[in-house]
Length: 205
DNA sequence: CGCTTTTGACCGGCGC
DNA sequence: GCGCCGGTCAAAAGCG
Image (cartoon, rainbow, N blue to C red; front, side):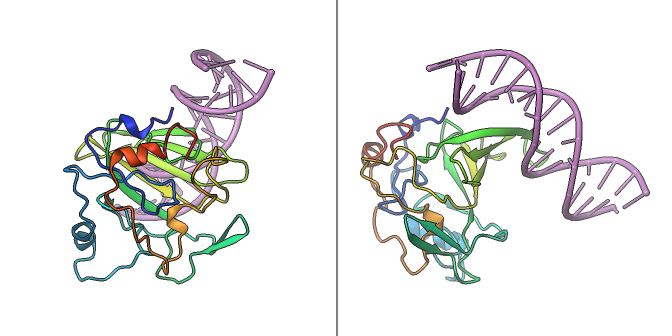
């Protein structure tokens, strides 16, 4: 099923937030250039962390936000996506990977597969298998460059990552629900082995 | 035995 | 109103 990050090639992974188990970040050349990536999406210098999840060297996507739950409660803590400009319950990113299913620490159940007209590659639909969690994600190969996997997350998890018990990661909300006021301040360019260490198995995120 | 994957059918939204 | 398309459902099969 989900492949471990270790199977991905020649990429440097980091987490957008040290305590978040999501998503694998990469850099083709091993150099994380967040500024350049951001610049490409915010040519005018605008944009905020809340608008786009910071994904290091991964590519940024602007997705029209669906009506999201304004506040997510995780472990008694509320993670708000409060302002109209910081909604980020739907994010998309493109990752260069040999495998389509990048293990983000959550358990996903595939519920559909569809050939879409906009891409020669089939699109796979996954739903978080945790009870009561309605987070979905779509995974498809980039039509322009099949080496890249385009993943779109829809919604926010209302639970911690499965298998997190005893793991170094505390129960947290996913990256995209992190309040914009608390932008990730570290972990950019963390080497692969660091990510892999925090990802010893498929369910240990 | 329980969970996941597969796959065709069905449904709703949208554009023409 | 009709057809297209994307997304979801649900039954059957497979796997650990």
